[in-house]
Image (tube, rainbow over all chains, first blue to last red; front, top):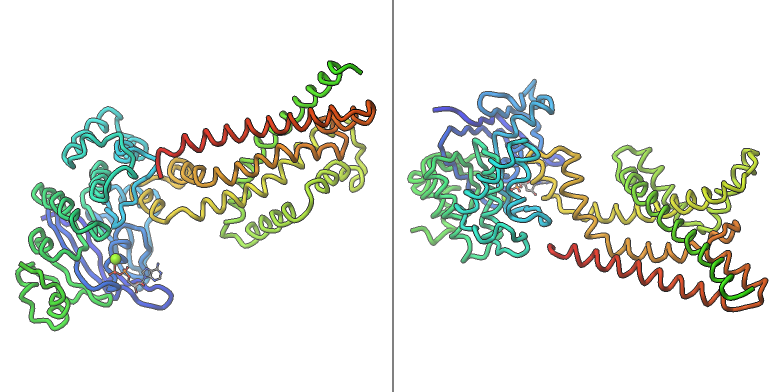
Length: 254
Length: 216
Ligand SMILES: Nc1ncnc2c1ncn2[C@@H]1O[C@H](COP(=O)(O)OP(=O)(O)O)[C@@H](O)[C@H]1O
Ligand SMILES: [Mg+2]
């Protein structure tokens, strides 16, 4: 198995408040990893460090064996910007609140970066975007603007936008938390479909049934540490006090 | 003086007024953007220079600034002022003054942009320049359009301040004809002109705002 991403001994503080305390995590090709944990436990911060939106204080960050950041005497040193830009092409991120570009149509949201960042052939990008739009069930919405779409449709556009960059690994930060309950299903379905296609994904979620279904591995985080990391089956039968307490809040486990 | 002669003199002034208006916008809009960057700079010195600049430009009368720009070279440096400098002085004074107002409008617009837009752009690999010009600025323009409209309408009326250095724009001419002919007609004509000009400008801005309303 090929290791796509690796984080070693990552630490991160915000003004003296240590949010990530020595986190290590690695993701292999084709794997789906879910991260669960109470709010404030550092899940978003972990994803933001992995996607270079936040700088780590200590630890390594490695994509496909290529170091984006390396720990030197307990302090993270990042590689040069042009190298980071290249490494950045390996991953995508789907935000909780979509962060679509409101002034771009659905099609332009999806195609603009592949054309103007990756400098790929316009025809090819447009063709692939059409396929993605179809796959997301948005064929009749290509020329719409984000404000004309439901939350679920917007999130599907943002997933398509991330996929259009052909990332090796896709991160999701609570992709359904901003959606009305009746709309979460359509997003979870899309992610499950991606899992079937062996897309490598790391998903922060509060949807326990979904996490159980879709993941190969689950990580339970609390107060900046990984409390438990195991298969979904074992996670839900955990003997760990904190894990049990946390999972106990979700009564709808089927 | 016949009405015809009066109007033809006034119309020369109109053209000058429109020219002041257009040139001031042409220079002050981009200059304002640069000053707003300075105002938001992480560099303490640059940020505070921009801050003081804006504060002075907004805190003193435009007419006074115009006089300083016009007479300053002579009083401060002893450079004799040629009459052609009058036109430059008007454009310089108006541009640096309006740039200060625009800078604050831009800053308000830029700071109101949610972080998520920058983060989405960063994860997609856009460069800083691409992010600003493709993602941020178009949205900022939409947000600030109503405030810009206010400034632009004020500018139409402010062009008349050029009379203070006797620059021959609409208002200066109207005033001198009115005095020499002992007639109210030039003032009435001037009023109509400014009103129609502003009506036109306001309609244009409204049209633009409508055009931008395809998204929220
Ligand atoms: N930019 C920031 N500045 C200061 N504190 C932050 C910042 N981002 C996150 N935090 C703090 O870090 C902790 C973990 O936050 P987060 O990673 O968002 O947790 P989660 O996603 O698990 O809810 C919280 O206490 C939060 O207040
Ligand atoms: Mg979070």
